[in-house]
Image (cartoon, rainbow, N blue to C red; front, side):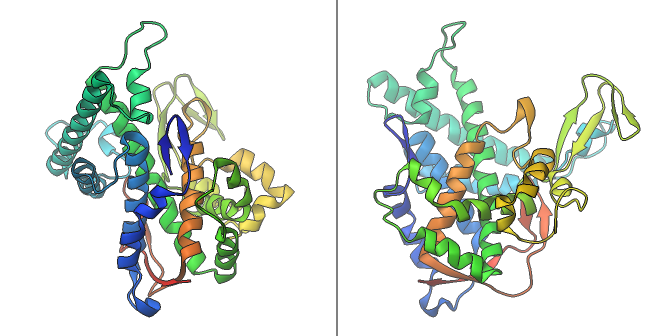
Length: 346
């Protein structure tokens, strides 16, 4: 999946770009377990760099961003206690130095990519991808285009939010299918198609794969908690939140609440076809948040996740290995010791 000539392109060359890596992780007879969080992260990052800059993840600067982001992700707590509690300035913030170093390295690489693209735009040689669109689109009120620093901020948001959340969901989806063989085979059947001619409109033919991905987002929402600040007094179930209160919203708990969902802890892709689920979805399904601050990349993330899941399961049979993974929260929901699956070519 990538952005070409002003359009989102699915299948084709981007899928072929992952072939060498998939060959390395697929051993004869599927005897060697594979850590699929790494594979999912690599694939999602590759999609983002191709969409933004028309470069693969193997590009030097792209690889630097990818490598440093994993350092940043592992040193970043789910919630910043300092943002919620009035901690004294002298109190140490753990991991701060390494986190700052990783963030600086990420911004340096992104700035180099943005500057290279600015030079290509000036020379008239820039590819027609998402970064070119953003950098050449003037503000409707001021007529000014984004400054380099502003563009780096935008690219950082696209990559850091878009790649990590998609990777988390994809890895958990593969695990769920590994532990539910019948569902896995249904996805494989949907994935048996001509991918070279696959178009965006063909996503509708992957309806069960979509249901699996939606169910994964329900059970393992990539962002399990989010913080919002009240702008006016609000009352929640008899408790008053004053102006300025920090409210923690938890998709993880909402998505598994027994009052809101039938069989809340069970993996059931079929629920998304049932009428009873519509009310639960409306009231308690927020993997991309909701309201004015809903994730602007939700549509892209859904298309990406469905496509990558179908491609992987269509090419490989996946089987769970060892003890069930234990979910923990960093920037997103990850497995404490990774997700080990055995991959065997179909």
